[in-house]
Length: 357
Image (cartoon, rainbow, N blue to C red):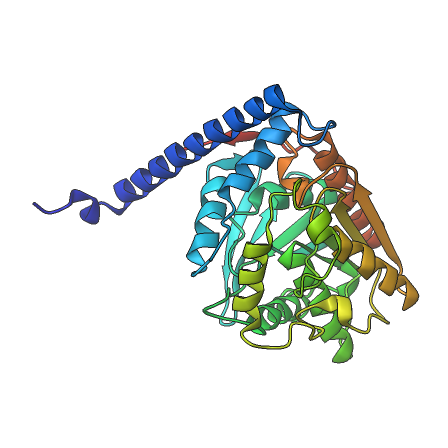
């Protein structure tokens, strides 16, 4: 008998979303049960964590692969599943496809077209997309009162370094030339690997003597692919990340290159001449030392850099803004940075998240 799903793509898509919904619900129930059991038998992972926040961290921990990771799909599937079923209200998405790259404009009622954020998503350079990061980009676009362009850059291992840097360069150049946006109107931002890519793009632009943006922001940026920070060990019991997934991602993206190369690990770069920077990190995340060491080196190089460390927060806690006040605070401060660097006040309100099928 012929499978009817093959003749009805829309029906197949609905079935896939239903499978993702059920899998995510099973993961959420398991995470909540483990969190409650641990609290009853012992104590919260951190005393400051609420039950909903700790349950989300536990869900991310369970969903993050560990051990021997053989393929990028082992990293991609959990992120796609966890982020696929929540969408913000009041957000407009406009796909963009060019000869060199693709992405999408994200706007809200607060958007001022004269203020632009180029956003580079995280995911270890092997996973992630504008869709997986919509929870963050939509809220950031609202807080910044900006048009946000979320780049869908090519991923490793199919497209290892320097493909992501080339795509980020092409998107920035497209904003300047095809979109006629002045560099003074642009702030570049990224989370995790996207934060590292943000700094790599700035370094490449500086070295090519091209106009730099008004500023840049890193949300829990991954700046050292050698994983040499002390908090890689100190915070491994509180963060949902693990060394296995970071090592595998660095191996796939680096593709045999020296991981200390500046555009792979910007921590080791000459940082002189970069525009004003805002770096945010959580005190409970494994990559905290990436941000602390980078900020110290940037200041020594004469860069105007602001480091904000949020107590008890894990890697890219910004995703949890619908339950975590410190995530909302962090996104507000990112928005203020954009407004200060570019100017022009914004207005309006971004609605709450909803689950959808």
